[in-house]
Every structure is written in structure tokens, then in C-alpha cells.
Image (cartoon, rainbow over all chains, first blue to last red):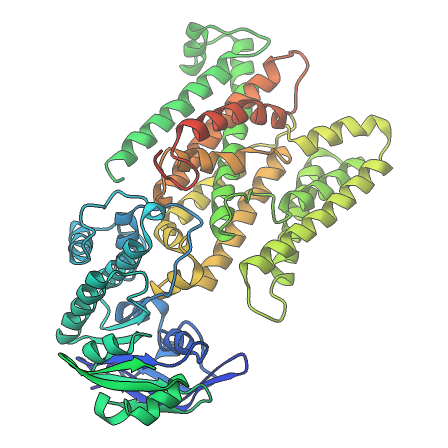
Length: 254
Length: 330
């Protein structure tokens, strides 16, 4: 049974048609990557899939139930989203921020339990921030902020994890370790949908691809089905060259 | 955070008790500790008992209630507008109340009418802003803030107009009302009940408020129903401010500064911040009001002047030694 599926989904933002009649289905173990040029609506599509904005038409179903009709709290128990960037008007420390991920799981009159703290600590450890629990978030570096966001998502424990450019601000070591961590998550009956600009990292860590061409047209499938020379040059409007690397094909811009 | 919460609340409760005692002891009739104890145990002489129980006690309770309501409303407005500079009056509630009150004073109506007119004006302003800020688009923070600020400016013009119209002998009462004054305060019982209900509600919403400070989109992704929550906060904060303004006029500064005093000492969890703000704001206003009626006795000063006189240095010291508005340690 698919965790998340869309039926004839039509999404628009401004004058951009993001997708037209998109049928798309996400199963446990899937690691999807949404690819497209700047401004084709990758983030908009991700937010629509998370239920944060309404599609122009079409349905999104979460475990066979209409996403728009589910209460926000139960959506958040199943779908988590890492935003492209963060803003702060009020201060918070690292532990408080990560514990926010437990919000959908705690009742209105309950406080965070020891178990919630344990989940949060494990998530911080998984992203290498376990010695920073008391640090104020605004004093963290961009890469540390990014990993904090991923830790918050892990603490939320959703089945479907949506991540908007998760490797932004990360050094090479942490790009690989975070993607491996996410890949591992997907193996435990979860699903990932990433928006990525690094085609080669996407090829290495994702097993399904959704291409947004910017005019409503899309293509989806495995790497061998959709990541063809013709598709990719059309997608990025830039000449590319395929080279064989140690992990398979690597695409280089010319 | 959880370990510190009881300590902080206990300290603030102690502060409230101390300020309450000081307020009961101070005034033109000097009362000693022993006499106060006798009065409280029911054995005091008639005059002392009357001064303490009929004059000073209701006034101290009114001061506490007003300060607590304003601090609570201020903290809520700051979260609602995601703006640390927001205070309970920023969206025009006090302007509406003042217009109602001044109109009642101008028409020479009695004090019961004064309070009803103030509360009616505050409610009218609240509904006006709520309705107009919807517009055709969504209920965004900036639209709400702009609508509120513009309505507040409109009330400002009406208040100026009413002041210009009113005869000279009425001006003093009006100015006192505009600066906030507890000497005409109605019975604080209703206000105190509103405070308790508001406090319980906000504590229940506390964790959602924590999440909402991270931004609406993030809050929605973490399972907060943002629009209903923001409407509840708006209505609640407006009702709390309207109740406070009806009790004692537009006392400035408390609602803006008290939540920040707590934030500067590192209190961030709204489940703790809100009750703590109520206690701190309440005791700050008891102290300010005691000073207002004793400093230049028998002349009474508007308490709004004293809240600023007490609050400004206190706040600056905290800002200088504390963690900074964004909580960074220096």
C-alpha cells in the first residue's frame, strides 16, 4: 500500500505550472528526488505534498485518506518537512528546538516525557550535535543549523520525510553522512522525498526521480528510465556529459 | 528548564506576597506589622480594618490583576505578531477603550458607564481589526499588524478630537485615564476571574505557542493548526487587554517589558513564561501603584508614569547583564 499518492495533481504558483495531472505514488523504501531548474516549483510541490498549501486541483492521499481532510496533527505524525531555510524572531536552544519534533505526539496538557527526551538525544547524536544541547540556535553555523533541522525531522518520526535541499550548507563529510543516515531511515519502512541540485549525490542516494520541466510537464521513474542525456539537457538547459565513476554514472556540466 | 520552573514560580509568588504586604502597609495612615496582623486575623480596630480591607486591599488586587492581564496579553501579542516590540495596545484595543471612556466622561456619565463604555470601545476595536484584517487574502501577520496600527492611529485622532472638545475642568480626569490610573478602578473580581481563565487557557496552549514562535510554516509542519490558533491568541489577548484597560486605563510599559524581562533571564518555554509574566507584571504594578499614591501624598500620580520609572532602569540592567534579546551568551 502506498504511503502517499497523488491523483491528477495540478499545482501552480504565480504563472508557473508546476505539474499537470500528476499521478505519483510513494511506497515504503522509496527514496525520491525531485529535480528541476530554479523556479520550477520544487519547493511548492514539496509544500503541497506536506499539506501546507492546497493544490489547484487533484487529490493527495496519505494512507488512503484525503490529506486536506486530515487534522494537521495527524498529518504531522506521518509527514515531516525540512524547510529550505529557517528564521528566528525568538531565541531557543538546541534541545528545545529538537523537542519541537515531538509536538504532534504529545497531548495538549502533557509535557515531554523522558522517552521524548531520549528520542531527541538520539537524533542529536545521529547528526553529530550531541554535545550542543544547551547552545542557542542563533549561535550555530549554517551547517550545524541544517543538521539541527534534520535532527528535528528525525525526532518527529514521520513515515514520509520531505527534505528541501538537505545538503545545503553542509561540508562534504556531512553531506555524505546525512544522506546515508536518511537512506538508512528509508530502509526501515519509511520513504524519502528530497529536492536536490546535486545530480550526482541524488543518483547515488535516490532510487526514484521526478523531473519538473517548468511547463507542467513531468517525467518520473528510476535512474535508467528518466535520467537520460536528452531529459537532463532539456531539464537543465545546459550541455552535460556522462562519465563512469566508482559509484556509477557521474554527470558533469560542460 | 523543568527543574528551574518551580523555583522561579516560587520566587515570583514570594515577590507578589511581599509587594502586596508593602502596599497594605503603606499610605497616609501608617500601619505597623502588628496592626496589619491583627486586621488580617480579624481583631484590628475599626478604622485600620476599614483602610486595609476596603481601600488598600481592593486597590492592590486591582493593581495585580491589571499588571498580570497586561503582561499576559503582551506576551501573547509578541508571539502572535512574531514581533518582540508588540505590546497589548499595538492593535488598537486601548485606543478603542479610551475613546469609549472619554466619550462617557465628556457626556458626564457615571463611573459604571465609564467602565462599560471603555470595555465596549475595546470590543468594537477588536472586532473591527479582526474583520478588516481578513480582506480578500489570507489572515497574514503583516496585514493584521498594519490594520491594527492604522485603527490605533484612527483612535488616536478621535481621542485628540475629544480632548479638544472637552471643557478644561474635565481634562485632568481624562489625562489620568489616558496615562492609566487605579484610583477609579472598579471591583477587580471580574478582572481576576478573566485573568485566571485566560491563564489556564494560555498554559494549555503553551507548547503550541512555543512552536508558533518558529514561524507559521514550521508550526504547521509540526502539527499546529495555525489559523485557528492565531485567532484564539488574537481574541484572547484582546479580551485580556480590554479587561485591563477597563479596570485602570491605558497603563503603558508593563505589557511590553515584563515578558522581555523574563526572556532576558533565559525563560523561553511559554508554559512557564506566561504564568511567570502574570506574577511579575502583577507585582510590578502593585509596587508602582503603591509608589504612585505615596510618593507625593496626598497628591496621586498616574501609575503609568511609575511603571516606566520602575521598569526602565530594571529593564536596562537586565539588558546589560542578561543574555541579550536573542539569548546569546556573551
